[in-house]
Structure formats: structure tokens, C-alpha cells
Image (cartoon, rainbow, N blue to C red; front, side, top):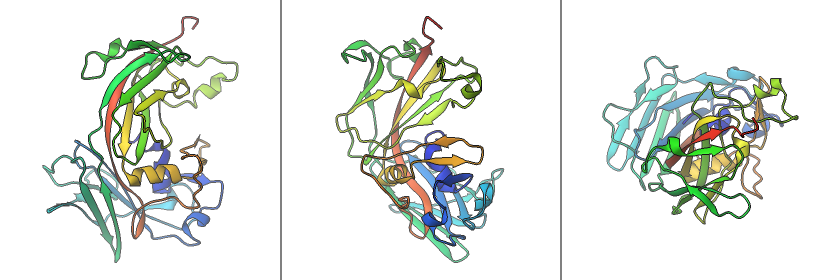
Length: 312
């Protein structure tokens, strides 16, 4: 999950990020002491950890913008069930774990979060999407859009047989659209030692080190149930996994309302972005009494292996 929320996690935690405008314009002249919550529920997976922190003064830099909250009371409810969270041993002070034997996250279900600390209270609600299923995956011609060959899904067989040459054709995935707020894609290179496949006069040796082995897309809508994956998101050979998330309103709103450009203290930049026409002065957190995210999604994935072009 850390790869999926990479694009928004920086803003969620207010750690190590600087927008092009003064942070105080987003959160007020003195936004210190605001509870920050971070929890993402995934259908058919266990209840997640909940991270709780608080903001400090907007002119602080780096991790100094965050303070862990280790004394919080954290509760998630679903119907008549109440799940009281406990501090996570071995993690930083603001990490809370669910009770033992908590059930898996259900589809199409309302979950509520309540966090209390020193007289402050932050609450949020999410409605989980239905189960998401990639029905078909294929390599298609990038001009005619005709299928070159179908690809194995994980339930179909060995995804290691999904061998595709870098920049030859397009990866297409088809699914039955859900009544979800939108979709979000993450890609991950699974071999940390695999070779770099981008060879261009515009990319020198030093710049290669800036390419990550994981990434995520802006929020998008796919009412036709078709997603074609662009090659510019791939920089390495070897095994990869693409995960498509059908996301709830909270997840969708935050992704599309994050300011378009962020840069951390090391100069690393990313562009979460949003939908055409979106123009938000402040991120949409959907958390009462605090900021951050309490969202949910369902997910399915496709694996494939990238081969360098013959000329490489």
C-alpha cells in the first residue's frame, strides 16, 4: 500500500513536502495541533493499522512538521461491531493496530473511524466499494488497438509467461465498471536488481538514479471498463505488477485535490494531479476535526515481465 499512496502520503503526513505556495495558505496561519489520520481499508484484506499524528507550525521544515500522537483512543466501527485499536509495539508512537482476529474488510459496507486525544476528536466515514475484478488482460497493437495476444491473469496461470518487449504494444485491462468514485493505478518493479531499459540521449547516468521502481497514477474515471497502461511509467526490465484500485470518495477526492506539484527536501518531485477542470485551494480530506485520509478500495492485479528491446 505504501506505493499506492506515495503520491498523497507526503501531504497526508505533512512530512518533508513543500508546495509552490506557503503551507499556511493551505492550513491557516497557525495550523499546529491538528490531528492527522492515515488509514486505508482494502476489501477482503485485514483491517489496517491507523497512523495518528498532529501538525506543528507551518514554518517548520521536514519531519519537524509532524509530531506522533501516542496517547490516542482509536476506534473503528462497522454496524454493531466495535474494533478498539491498540498502540503498535515496535513501531513509532503514532501507529495503532487492530484487535486480534478482527474480520476482513467487507465490500459495500460503511466503516466509521473515531480518534480522540487530549480533548480533540477526529472522525471520518468510508463506504467500501464492491469487489473489483480484472476480467481480461491483453497486449494490443498501439496503432490499430487489435489484440496481439491475451495475457494470463493470476488466476489463469503463470504470469511469468506474460513477457512483453519494452515499448512494443500496449497493456490493456478490461473490467466491469463498479459504482465507485474512481480508479487509481499503481505499478511496482519486483526485482530491485533488474536493468534500466530507458536509453535516450536525454537521460544521462546520473539521472537514471532518479527513476523509481514504483509509482502511481492520478485519479481517473473509466466508465467504459478499459484501462491501457502507458510505457512511460516503466523504467526497468524484469517482473512487474500492475494494481488497479476501485476507490471510495475519500481516496478519490484526496488524490485529485492534492496540489499539482510537490517537492521534498531532497529535491524529489511528483505530480499526483487530478481531473481536467479541477482547481482546489485546499485538499479534500473528508475528516471532521482533523486532516488526512480514512478511505477504502478494492483491488485486482496483473503481473508481467518486461524484456529490453533487441537493440539494447
